[in-house]
Structures are given as C-alpha cells and as structure tokens.
Image (tube, rainbow, N blue to C red; front, side, top):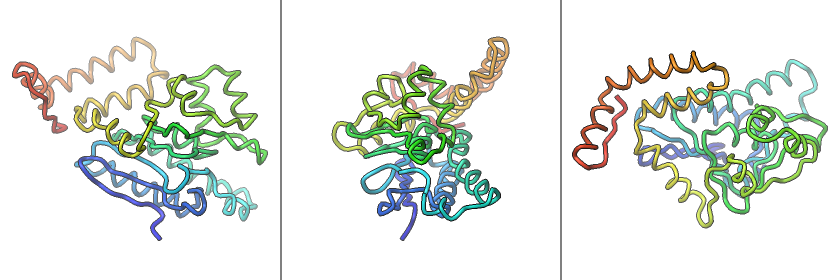
Length: 257
C-alpha cells in the first residue's frame, strides 16, 4: 500500500497521508514519503499549490507510538525526531504555498503539521488536539511557537496542558483556520486554493518567505528588503502581464517569470 497518495491536477499537487488504519500516525516510512512528495511538488514548475490531507477519519494522529515505543536510546530518538521535524521545516521553506485540508482530527504532531501549513481549510467537525500531555510529553514540531505567536499565552497553556480539543470554528476565530468547509472538504480546499493557482507565482513566493520571517526584521531592514524585491518584480514578465490585463480589463495570465 502506498503510504502517500499523490495526484497532480490543474496546477495543484494533492498529497494525502495514507495510513488510515493507524490514523495516519507518523511512522518513519510515512515521514520519508511525505518529505519526498513535498520536495517533488516544490520542484515541479507546473505546480502552484499543494493541498496536504489525510486518508480515513482524520488528518493525522501525530507521532507513531508503535515506533516511539521501540526507541530507547537518545541517538535513535533524536534521529526520528529530526526526520519528523523536516516535514514542517520543508513546508515552511518551500516556495510553494501549502494548504492543510483537515478532516476529523489533527492531534499531536498532526496539529503541528497543520499549523506549519500556509493556510488551513478544515471540515466543520474537525478538532485540533495537543495530545502530548496525555503521554507526559511537550508539543513538538514547532507547535508551541506557532500557537504562541498567534494566541494569548494563557490560552495556549490551557490548550497544551489540558489536551483540550479545539474546534475548527474556534481556531478560525483566532485567525488560524482560513476556511471551515461546510460540505465537501477537498472540493472546498481546491476552491480555496484557486487564488494561489491564479495568482503570480513569483510574488506569492516572496510574500510567503517575507511573512514567515517578518518577526525577525526591524522596519529599516524590512523596508530595504521590500524595496529590493519590488525592484526585481517590477521588471518581471508577470508584472507586465498584470498591467496589460488591468488596462485591457481582463484576467491576467501569470506564468511565474
């Protein structure tokens, strides 16, 4: 059985974790295949957006306890943790926008992966659970940082230490979920991603990386970087196409150059 299903259609790469019998828990094999699929999508010039999802009843239950239970040396534990961490690091670093399409539940490191995505589309009944405290662990794969950057600290502490399920609607109220799907999750995730597919790839790439690192910049550095990027983009073919489309009152056809 393929641990990751990949379909490419209409400039979107659909990457789906496929261990439904294990709630898409992150075995080392699944981690390796997700990493490979993300890298392949990012290198494919025809792909403008990735939609990452999970087969079965949930997005992902997070770390694979069956795997973790067999790791009893620091070296082997660290090797697994570093490899799993690469999933969220690649999502952040890749040029392509990633939409997490969350069904059922995103628990533990599954919550972390969803939060690493650029956008989240979740079905209305989806829940997000920091389940680490249930097994006497702290959140990993960047979850504490991602939540603390966006939600008041007392609430983050409550979510993390209580393992309280948080609804898609509550996360949307905090600006962490972009769209709550009322009917068909994948159809609505695809519809949501259309602004990425139709948008200017180069500009989107710069926006993603700039916003992801904005908190590290002061205004002087930010102003200089914006000016340098804008100088580059003003010479692009996509900028010329956008201006031409504006005056000709038509939809632009961006090519990414």
